[in-house]
Amino acid sequence: MITSLIRWKILKKEHRELDIKISTLVDLSSTDQFTLRLLKKNKLLLKDKISRLEDELTPDIIAWKLQF
Image (cartoon, rainbow, N blue to C red):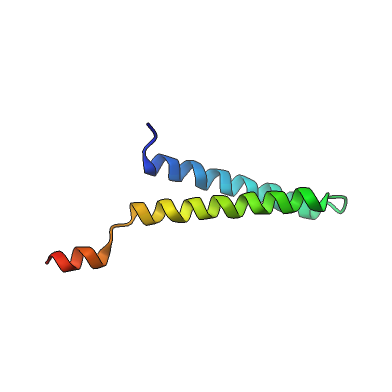
């Protein structure tokens, strides 16, 4: 089973790669807009997954303070 931290690293890498791909396609004037929108949507979905994982990995500071 993949740990949350490893999954987070994989998602961050995929997000960076998509960002590079999108930037490259934007620079090309003949880029298909549908493809570009699809890539941007996938990038946003990855960002959401990354955010959820970061929430899991970050300790709940309020709950921690309530314990002490």
